[in-house]
Length: 184
Image 1 (cartoon, rainbow, N blue to C red):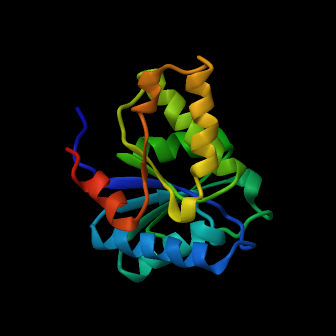
Image 2: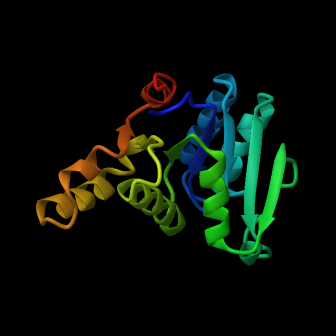
């Protein structure tokens, strides 16, 4: 049985080389997280969609927990103004702490790291390690090709139909937060 959602892990891109509308939408998500009174847990960066979401949440007096791995120091801008900040030795330790501190997962547009995090929390759910909601925010149709690829897993027998029910999609901010806040 799922408990009330109080904290949400946000997986998203750290690149600044993306269209401005992605940054703007990430900021709207950050504002809404704060408005809903949710804690935000994310990768601890101050760049790309990660930084935009965190900064927007903080602007609205939201509580933001960053989890930054030492391997990214010097490669990615680290956020220094968070409510809580953890520096861990490995990417795996980062994902584990984000998992431990969150009640749900929201996946915004991102690249390989975002996909890695998404596949891992879905796999952990397949293995009965959690029942936390996983919602891919399909802003601007970003996850359409991912959905097409994963549908091939089911069609070819590489994943069972039950796995399809372990994650969800939201097409807009209102749908995303309705799916998060109507649980419990």
